Picture 1 (cartoon, helix red, strand yellow):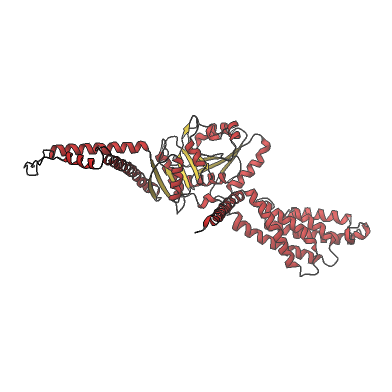
Picture 2 (tube, rainbow, N blue to C red):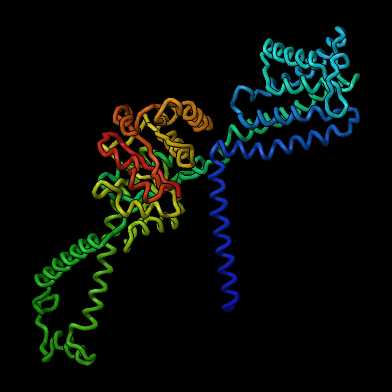
Length: 535
């Protein structure tokens, strides 16, 4: 027994663990964004690499510290834009090395012409002398040589200028140290980019290795289409499975109860017709002992203090309710089994069936069943009331399991063209792209678009879309339109089988009131719509 004090400690530890899990999950989703990942990598790898290079080259007494400033700036350029123009490791190494050689050449040329540092009389801090002629020549040679060799690198100018401060006789040592140090940085960068950054979807994006155990509540106008939608999402992963859920409500139980009553009446009529004459099986009359069965029942019930309408009647009602519920569950299970067999045959994904008795909250029943069956994604049919989502859908959004709401336009069960409008990079955007790729396959078409208000925002939107699609396999089409999302969808949605959208649950109530979510403003679209929410 823990006692009251032990219970308080246990509760506090449990709360801390829940907080730790939430914070870890929030951090993982934060680092999913490419910009955050890049900034984090810069903060981690640039200081570590400079420290490692410093340790490696500290043993060389003649090595000047002058190589580290351009090395640090070049390292930042590599990691800050891994897909940019200056992210080539070969360009990085060659540019820095050529810059150091240009500084050496400028010193030699100034000395040969007699216009070196001594003649110029310019003094640098620490007693080092730099000539204006040599500085100009070093910058000119760095620009010309890197341009001619196609190894333009901003840090090349730094090494060229800092090479002018190298003590006489150490120019070759400086150039070789730049070559070796930059090579070390380049090797680490190549390993980071190829083994982690280019495969960040595999390591960081939760939907790429999860959201494949899909629970499909069989409700709404077209649950069969939604079931196929969930099945195709699950089938994209080898470990995927589908669980079809039917929630038996009070109406279904009442219907099954009526069926049981009808069965009982038919059985009573058969008894009255075949065996109700009071005789034995051979037709012989039954002796009359002055009592009948009803009298016995009355006597027994009278002994119990009742009139025949008390405890026995209550027990019968309870039994009838139990049998009615069992009948409703059995009927639902039979229907689900037929659908499960069809899904397994057409899609080839394992399919289970579950029938649950509903409580006060349908969403709570669905989420509880998802946890019990080990599902990490709920695919449910679209439901609306007065132009907005029903409370059932919003309750699912508030749960701790990912949700995708499917609005079927015509009962479609295959999707080969998907449109993914994106407002900003986020974990929801990654999930939408992953789901779209699962549904259309490698032969399908996926178009990712972003709508901006002016041409000045186009470049930023293009870069954002490029970062979004780059980690995923297969081809993507990216579009940036300078028009509203409603207008864009009205003009282009008919060219696609499915349009993905985010649930906008991160917006405040005031924001949603002023500007309703996009999916509430496109009721007129004649294509399927999928609304994605991350828990």
